[in-house]
Image (cartoon, rainbow, N blue to C red):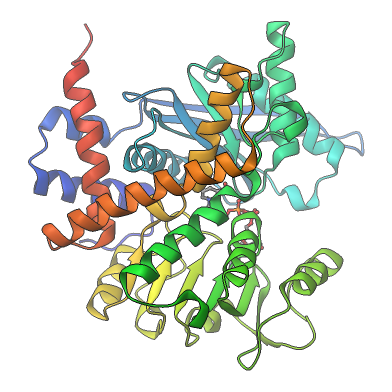
Length: 417
Ligand code: NAD
């Protein structure tokens, strides 16, 4: 496979390889290689100092054959249209792997939310929501949080969309605050799903989670919940990180509560007392049983994959492993639970939130978590079965399951007109 770091090319390359294997017809293959709709918006925002800045945003719908498009919104200074397209494709695949009735979408704004005030973020979000309102809607395309966005941002989008309609439309976004129709369990869902995946992988490999050590890259929404729930399950968390670096304590468990407190106070986990400061590269190479990359893409590459010592990798982030790294990990016998399976907890509970909004009723947290466990365990078992019967990696198996489902749906619906 030709080497590239362009995520969209990587994703399409993977789909193409699986289409070859599954003998998927050309019409489906061609459709999967493109995004159905790609909207770029350039819009002005008044900043607190009275100046005006023009921001660029995207909303991409990859494929909505199986249901309304679904996917998060990312606020990041380096985000590009191609990255947004790749993330939209992954959403098509994820919703198909866990068999929920959605297609795939993603949105983004090129901005640095860390240096913007709340008022600036609100104005940016409301204008962006208004700009993409020609695409979004509860039956059409439903955004959710991703890197750099959170329940408050979803609340602003819901309010902006509702104002344009003249009535409240809670189902236009998921990952909202509970007070305005969010679901119990949604905030923790992606991290919880990672831990369900880790537990299922441990069961399969005859590992006792209580006797394992784990390293978690991130310390944002997904990573911090995954680390906390892994620790609650008896696993020893020996290192965590964020964009500024990591902290490691090999001899005793990291005190996660205080690590998070330190991050809140100083902006980073780095400098936390009772732990050694390490780089993100060093973190990925630490001896451990379970590695959870839950930060950003392209972290495990050809350059460092051979140094990974974990037995199991649970991909909390989207696209943390490059195709070249994948081959090295496979050769070294590392069991990888791929992103399109491991981090589906968020979209699964987003689906539950949307269902609750449409039915105007609410589930308790126990029910949400039980249904999440059920859907993820089913998907994991199906992917594992394909991986064993076809002698392919878990990633290839998950792609096979997803692509077969989407291709079948496209064939059944046919082509209009
Ligand atoms: P977040 O913004 O809450 O956290 C991101 C974290 O990554 C931050 O702690 C940041 O400091 C850290 N980070 C950034 N660059 C880094 C680097 N180079 N090295 C180490 N750490 C770095 O975002 P999140 O919602 O937790 O998302 C994390 C990943 O999970 C993303 O890939 C996202 O697409 C994926 N994901 C998120 C959800 C969700 O529900 N939030 C669902 C599915 C997948």
